[in-house]
Amino acid sequence: MVGSTAALMLAVLTGLPSVVRGASYGLTDSYIGSGFFSGFTFMTISDPTHGRVQYVSQSAAQSANLTSTSSNTFTMRVDSTTTLSASGAGRKSIRIQSKKQYTTHVAIMDVRHMPEGCGTWPAFWEVGSNWPFNGELDIIEGVNNLGPNLSSLHTSSNCTMSGTRTMKGTATFNDCNVENGANSNQGCGVKGDSQRDFGPAFNSAGGGWFAAERTNSQIRTWFWSRADTRVPAEVKNGSGSINTSNWSTPTTLFTSNSCNLASHFGPHNIIINTSLCGDWAGGSSYGQAGCPSSCVNYVNTNPKAFANAYWDIAALRVYT
Ligand SMILES: *[C@@H]1O[C@H](CO)[C@@H](O)[C@H](O)[C@H]1NC(C)=O
Ligand SMILES: *[C@@H]1O[C@H](CO)[C@@H](O)[C@H](O)[C@H]1NC(C)=O
Ligand SMILES: *[C@@H]1O[C@H](CO)[C@@H](O)[C@H](O)[C@H]1NC(C)=O
Ligand SMILES: *[C@@H]1O[C@H](CO)[C@@H](O)[C@H](O)[C@H]1NC(C)=O
Ligand SMILES: *[C@@H]1O[C@H](CO)[C@@H](O)[C@H](O)[C@H]1NC(C)=O
Ligand SMILES: *[C@@H]1O[C@H](CO)[C@@H](O)[C@H](O)[C@H]1NC(C)=O
Ligand SMILES: CC(=O)N[C@H]1CO[C@H](CO)[C@@H](O)[C@@H]1O
Picture 1 (cartoon, rainbow, N blue to C red):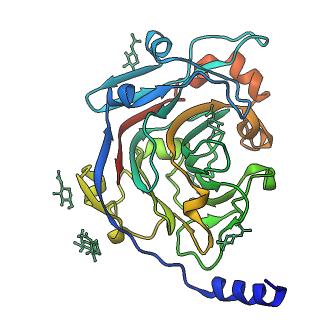
Picture 2 (picture 1 turned 90 degrees about the horizontal axis):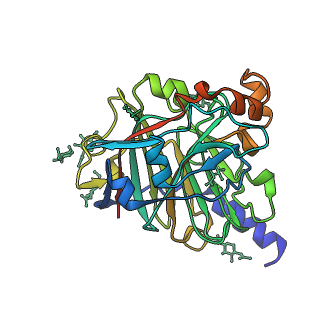
């Protein structure tokens, strides 16, 4: 394609309003209480982003009471009793990954509490094999109590976000390509707009609901705080069917205007983990948050500081 035609094509594409349509879905998987033990695997891999954590197995987590369930609760904690040797392994934490994979779907997580505190890096996300070629969608991510309650896409080249996007959040980068480490692997992110969607502010409001919808024409996320009157009844009550076309303006909207979503996002596993320090939480944001000492030293020597670094999840429902 000659340059002028390409430029014209781009102008035409970016001039188009983003198509916003939803769909109706039925409940496929409901992870509640011990359902997280049967539907997820506790991964003992080392943290690829260099966190000061040691992800433990389900049996190790259960004997240390780092995970527990009731009929409507699943908790995932970070060890808050052990002082670590600087030369030894990181603080015990948990990373769970769904046994099932999902392509187009809606995931809704009802969360009462997320990990908070200096050094914490909680994440609720989805990822495919052969990263970044099958893509990654981060639904909840932030560090050191600061937010910015970021949702991001990461994938290979030729995936950018173009056109006006009707969403409540604010875009960071518009290029989702992280194939060659572009933009320090940050991908295309969107910062949330809510004052209650991350860390201590989220927790003191009683948590809330995060939802993500993935189709081949768009990827959207929503957040509703616990007392938000706009939360759809079908989200609140864990309905057997949902219709996203009737939901309010999303926090994030990623379009297919200049990204072939079907070819950039393969089957995804759902992951929930709590990292400590590492590339993001242990970087410049640690000091910017007013956190003491160095991140790794703080994690090693202050076990009690991690008593609130836990997830309390009421339910995760996946609709297709
Ligand atoms: C845990 O979560 C962080 C934040 O998203 C991520 O960067 C890191 O790679 C994750 N670690 C593992 C082992 O999944
Ligand atoms: C285990 O942790 C749960 C909360 O996650 C708590 O309610 C329970 O008392 C703890 N059990 C023990 C034996 O410490
Ligand atoms: C949940 O709310 C939806 C929408 O109002 C309603 O259609 C459905 O019957 C409710 N389901 C339950 C189990 O309450
Ligand atoms: C979903 O909701 C939209 C908007 O209210 C409506 O037009 C559409 O018919 C609904 N779809 C189904 C399958 O109920
Ligand atoms: C769609 O939303 C409108 C406005 O919130 C509401 O009046 C209507 O009942 C909803 N329809 C469905 C099918 O949930
Ligand atoms: C880039 O993606 C567009 C669709 O968004 C497609 O038409 C084009 O062929 C792709 N280019 C390359 C080099 O893959
Ligand atoms: C809870 C929280 O930190 N919310 C922040 C989310 O990000 C926006 C800006 O993008 C802030 O204004 C909120 O305070």
